[in-house]
Image (cartoon, helix red, strand yellow):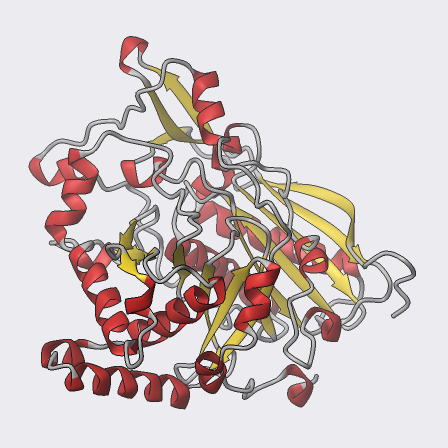
Length: 480
């Protein structure tokens, strides 16, 4: 690859609007869960695939993706809508999904300078080439989810590489959380696969989404519209755009943890807690706690805080199964809250054999913030706000996404992905996103965002690198 003097990027060649079949107009009001994400960026996740052999031309591939996306949008029709804002006189504003079939966008792009899969996924586990990867995603100009009033709620960019293709998804986070997002992507992949394998059969979705929004008042026969207490629409727009961009270009690493490494981390946390006399904490330790506490300690150490500096761990928690009665897994909307530990002096977090204590702190924070009573209290007792998920903090680490999301099951008809990556949305120093490992078996990949000096310090962290595993299924070993 000859890059000349500039790094390679993707160049967009065309854009198509994809609409579902016509249906009666419907307005779906956003819940307090949903509006809390109006100030966040679009979800930007993408999948890297080997070359799609069934298609003689790129145009045929795009036609296939367009037709199957229209099939998926017929079922997930809110994804093809826009946001609508309604003034309630002196009471405030409400935001709804206007399901009028305005359409999603399908973009076609090519990567410059003969870029291939090895350039996107370097074989030496180096930094993610962020400038290149971020050019694979649409709607980079969207400031936040409130832009869904004018911009599509979903767009996908199909970028041709020398030896593969990258599908970059941009999805309005106020529309739904990651659980529902990946259910939609998998439903699209299923319809695409059905069109290739059974051309005469009607594409179907195995588990249709539950599109009715849940409000806690509904359990008592209510269900009031959520009103945002802002003076006017322009004030709401300004409020949603307050978060400044990161002051420096972040470095990004994908850290792989094998099932064996994760089991060893759990065992170490348990032994630490048993040695401190916390048998209950030792019994309750999960893989999430063990991995999160390792990353929390390592990121904190890389920042070199003063010993008395308070530090915090935060994580996004899926509340579907924590409500009573629980929401079904196919609930389409947001059902996440941010769990947080209390402030801990850095010296205590980084003390010898404190891995177990950190794991217990993470577990107790998640448990305390995700009971049925707590969730209902947060949704009913507090005034609605668009700022609930502004979690960038120089003294905190925040974990989002989930290794339970079925990223590598997304087969659009030409095989499973070889890598998952993300765009620039919702990135800041100390942000960690968890992905499943491509080889499965309970492996996890942690995408870590840090300022350059912090990442340089993290690279010297022996505790972390003793747990990081070589990729058990590098793309080079299964090249098509």
